[in-house]
Length: 102
Image (cartoon, rainbow, N blue to C red; front, side):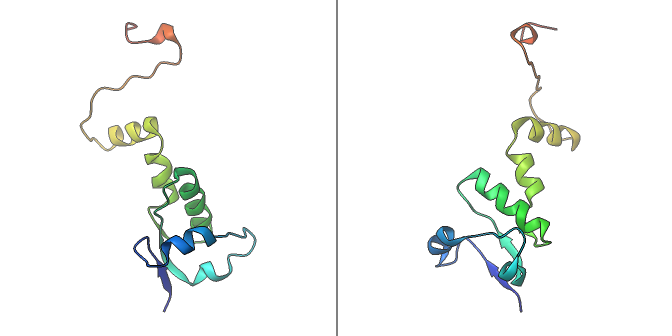
């Protein structure tokens, strides 16, 4: 039986401080069937899920989902592509392309 880790585990605080990844040697991480990522740090959570997913370990959420949700423009584009109703969004890269530009 494979192990699983969750933010609800009583050892969460201890494990948060002890998480280490050796990119060349997944080691004991391969014993997990799935990992629930609940980091308060977007960057650390994203990097952890990228590493785990690259080793074939499923995560909730996946690195791809975390990357999409962590970027407002990418999230907006994904919602638009899925047909989810949302306010009209515009993107401007210069002041000249601002709200008065049509």
